[in-house]
Image (cartoon, rainbow, N blue to C red; front, top):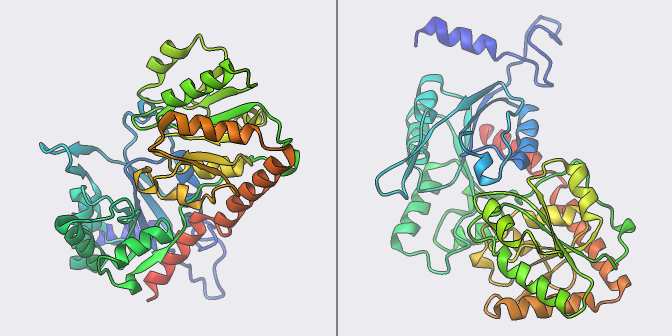
Length: 397
């Protein structure tokens, strides 16, 4: 890349920090304000990450790196966020199958030398390690964003070494939750490099707890129909309670690799309503009005936060390290949601649902109010605003 090309790229990125195009909002001397260039690297752009990109856009010239290939088959919507550039990447699996490589990330860091890189912290990706090493070599600060080791009570020598090295090479490790941060402190990572931005999502249309009755007959499952969702035991339990005479219906929002098989197998169950993939927040909120609680019986993640937004106390299993993410740790059993014993299986889940269905309406309304309050706390400020402030602070450190 020639010097003139680099100068041209820099000029193309000159815009006023408020988002005004270059040439507008110039100062008294005609000087233009240049926003720092940020590479935001993700394996894919899920709908809940759009708010993050919008918030980053307010402070940075954002270039998003992600793979869109095949996302619909996994239950995601194909998103094209508003950013300065969307770089379509290919993710290749190496022969070991556990090691992956996201293309175009390393070359763009070396050639363009952005002001900062914010990248997901999956240590199985060679592209993460190349980005960290390249950042050191060309003096580009790299921040990594991830779950830490909360799922591993004993991290082991290799995993400990990987995470300690990743944190050492990064300027910051942004932890999903306080539990994620503690897990990294426990293996000796420097506290000064660890910062928490509680992992969350925002919805354009939620449900206020004041309109909940506490007598709704529905349970909402919302999420991808994937390995580990454990929706089949939930269907069986709802069928059991329905057979006992309980007024209970399961509403299923989501799709994924197991979607078609599940609909064929359980399509004749009158107590299960299938909606498929629904991405419109207004439509999801309308469906949720028929529900008293939400339930993700398998390895849950951000679906817990979505349930909070809908004033639905979530039901999840009690073995937190076996969840997909640390977000079920936001639940306080009996106050903002409910745990059932994972070891107890379907019997424990059925007992929890019977207990909830026996609660008086005022108790359920109080739990719904507490659940919705957690959503407000997690988004004050939003995840995107937190990440933008963390990146900005790292640039000025």
